[in-house]
Amino acid sequence: MGSFPDSMNEYKNQLKKGYLQEAYQGLMEYMRDLRSYLQNKYPEYSGSRSIYYGYMDMTYFSLFPKALRSRKLKIPIVFVHDTFRFEVWLSGSNRNIQTDYWNLLKESNWNKYTLTPDPRAIDYVIDHILIDDPDFSDLDSLTGQIERGTLEFIRDVEGFLSGQRI
Image 1 (tube, rainbow, N blue to C red):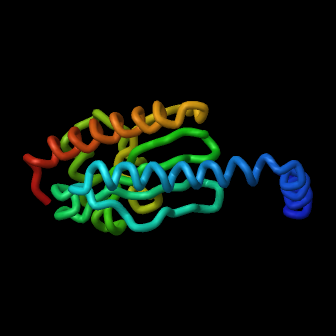
Image 2 (cartoon, helix red, strand yellow):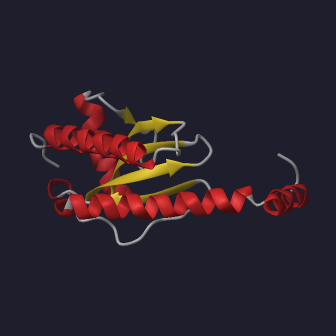
Image 3 (cartoon, one colour):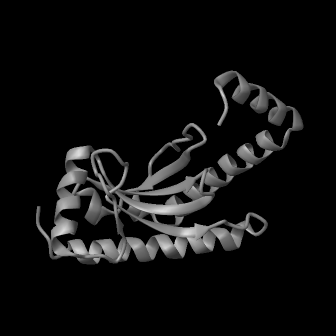
């Protein structure tokens, strides 16, 4: 990467082309539609009212399944911009909660999903790649893939945690 002025000149040049704005707006609309779709279809997962739009690093919204909400846990569905992929995370309502569950998972050796290296510095306890390099030409299919992967992740996490105490 270059200096800040060099980066700003490149940013200006990319904005002049118009593709950046169109792509970003389309992605934000898709994330809003995906959130609405999942919240309407799965009201028992009471989703977040807002979307975190980020700094072009990540964009996400969260679902709060009842069994996890009572543990102060949530399920963010995340588009990670630099890796260009959708992920699903298990996150805590704060870093202390995340650390408690990180310790539980680490000690249990449950390794179905990737454990964060540092729950105090990263926004999740575990993560899972839903779709690497998504195809945005068929949004219904993309939504179906995200839905199926997210539901499986939630079932797995709830199943594991059902026999655990913190």
